[in-house]
Length: 286
Image 1: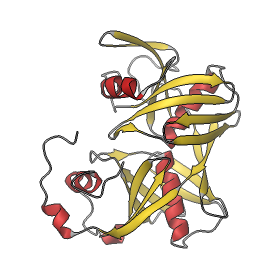
Image 2: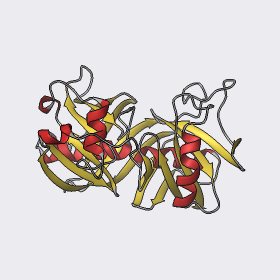
Image 3: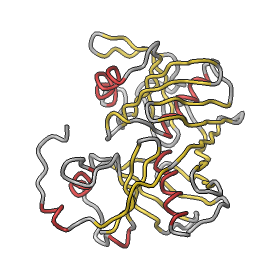
Image 4: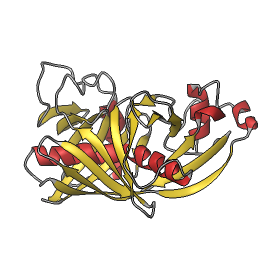
């Protein structure tokens, strides 16, 4: 099984071509490949390119716990770079079909930076989804253990919970992120960002990613957090998102359609041995 591996600001993905795995990927196989001790190690798998009836390419995105994600901003940038490296695209825009909607990608002529038109951000409880009456989910209270958080929720094709924080930290993200991800008010689970507004052009976030855990960077999380900062009137339409892995630029039009720009780096390529799939994982990945 041939693979490519890239990272986008420390958020790493393995790219697999569908014709390399004609029988498909089971959740157990995904967990093995992504495991950082027993497998290749990554924050997820990008399965593509596949044929699409409406777009240039189709892509499936898998979390390291074996679940399937609707959309990933970093994953889309990595996928675009992988297509570039395989000479399947040029620096002209091309479309990609995901479970979370259609996006348009454009690669910098040198191949090191990718811009993705991520689609329209929505704060609607029915689209995210968040339980309760139909509404825009803005500045609501969320009690988790001994803490009460103020949060907003958004979707960019996948669900996000943005927690307003004076001092986001990896400790806070690791402690409360998994509890918020699985809270009953989020029926499809949810990605979590702890956000600090630095000024009208900059925000800082720490990320707990649904199905993956603590993450150094995320394109969709950056988009959702920046959208909340703009929606609440804290920031303008052109925002730099600061994360432990680095920075991403998010821009919005008046209808909250988002454009994301950020770097991608190739790590390696290789072949996954059949012997890997004879491994039995321990009961916990942590």
